[in-house]
Amino acid sequence: MSKPARHVSATPATDFLRKHDVPFVEHPYEYVEHGGARESARQLGWNLHAVVKTLVMEDEKAQPLIVLMHGDCEVSTKNLARQSGRKRIQPCRPEVAQRHSGYQVGGTSPFGTRRRMPVYVEAGILALPRILINGGRRGFLVEIAPACLSALLDAQPVECALPD
Image (tube, rainbow, N blue to C red; front, side):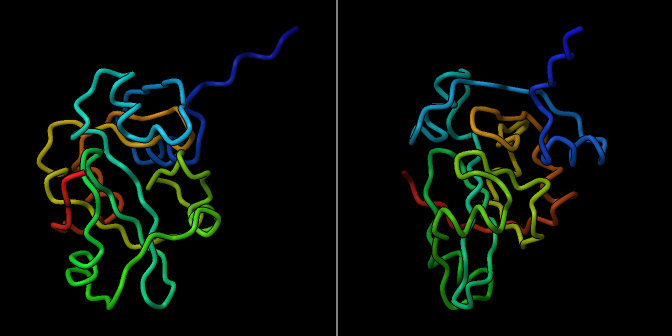
C-alpha cells in the first residue's frame, strides 16, 4: 500500500494561515535560481507589482526584521531605517536570514517564522486587491488578501520603495 501524496502546501507558513482561518490559493511554479519575483510572476502570469518579496534584514544592533516589498521595487534601507526608528538597516547574510526565519532563502515566508520579528510592509501592497507571497518553500507562492498582513503579523506600513 502506497502512502498518500503529501499536499503541496504543507509548510509552517500554510499551517499558520490555516490555523488563523486565512483563505489562500496555492501557486506552485518551477523554481529558478536567482529568478526571484520576476521569474515567478512570469511563470504564473501575474503582474510583478503584486508579487511580494519577503526580505529578512537587520538593524545596527543585528536585530532582525522582515520587509515586504513589491516584486518590481527595491528597498531604500535609509528610508526604512528612518521610518522604523533605527539608525541603519541592511540585508542579512543568507545563512543569518535562514537562521532567523527557519526558511531557505528563496522560500522565505513572513508567516510561521522560527523567530518572531517586526514586519514592515510597503504601503502600496496593502492597497492591492490580492497578492502573491511566498508559501514557505522555493517554487511555491500563495495568493492572499493583503489585509491579513496587518491583522496577523502586525505589519507596519512604510514608504521605502525604490524602482527596480
